[in-house]
Image (cartoon, rainbow, N blue to C red; front, top):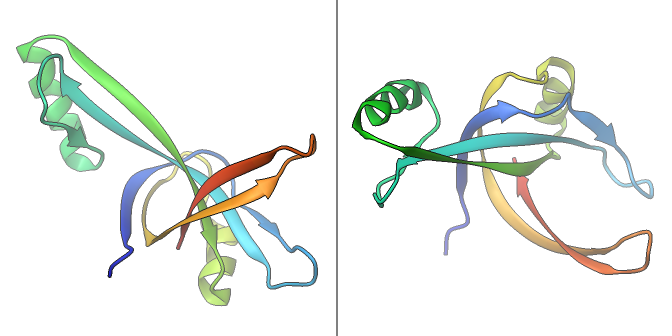
Length: 120
């Protein structure tokens, strides 16, 4: 089995480092990815340098639609965690590779919620 995710997008806010219950610290940030497509078309162009050329191409062919998806990124590995916290900043274009993790938590109103996180 394989659990692998590759994302190219823009950082939504400066990373924060958290430590819960004496466990190892984790650096957390959000990453926005974009999909664009021509109305009525099933092919989708995603992020990166090609995105700009594709956007111009699609604009010439008719109406376009865009969807932004926000991803929660968690970095646990000590070296990478510290470098991410120190150097990654809001608005930076970033490539992230990791695995997807589905979890549950209880919010402040005692409601069980589901969370999807990319573990980099």
